[in-house]
Length: 362
Image (cartoon, rainbow, N blue to C red; front, side, top):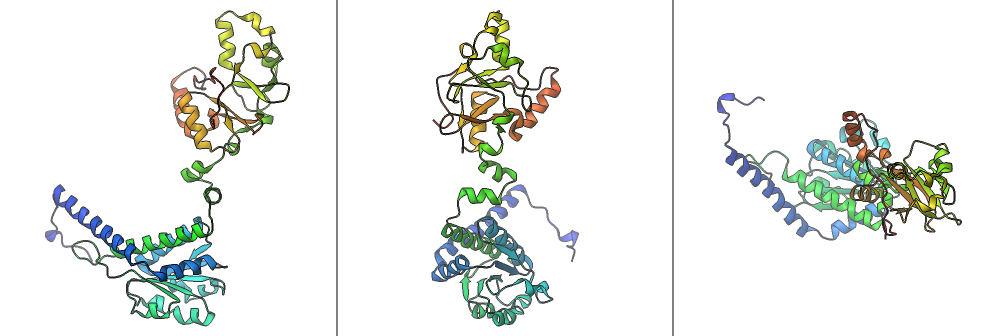
């Protein structure tokens, strides 16, 4: 139904802000009251979720159904296998997706949604436990459920107070609480979270340096006793890198030598150093990062210290790889932009400078 254009009234900016603040405050107040209503029914629901050996199946119609989809996604991403089921599709064959080891979570503010109620008898026949999230404990859904979580009396936001707003906000918050408490009981860790979020910014924050570094076989590595000429003459084993990691007799990282160091030898007319050992011209105690460190922390070190290569060491101080700034998505766009504006080489004017011995994790 279209709104009569003659009855439409433009709200002033102050009226828009007042109305928006009232809506948000109404929902915020409802969440505050909801937190005080939590009782042992919530704990019973968590016990069902924690003990579920199959999948948690969420379901609901309309706006409640959309919230149910989000709850299923949150459960799945925090260690509880979960799927969403459309109630209308369920009664036309998709009930076959529900097994005896599953738990069903049903959302309905009134507790009398027709499509939801039609699932109760088949679920009871299969002996599948039901968690109901509803605003009416006296409803048909609440009476049929194994556990009924009461959202309490809720006032929908806005002038009309009709559109699902406060109720869906409360359902969403309750679903988050159930999912995250259950996740805690599963001892779900950041490492587990990373396995389920390999892409996007979340996955990037939890990625380890080993996942992004160039492995040692693709890095320029040499003995500190070799001459500069010998090291520079060696072909690069992998992708072009502007740095060489120097090792002592025990295979530990003893120094670092970059293309910038090489250029400085010529700029300072130290050509005779080319036939001397690398240990006399290398950067001793270069900035490094330990194996197992988060990639985002390594990136922060590289940005703050303005270095373009970062050796990755094991616990014994032996290099296992190298992080090169050109391989990092965080810097790729800015590097590409700078190279397109300048005829010079695309590599940034960063270097692993001579500093007192330290590592990113020290």
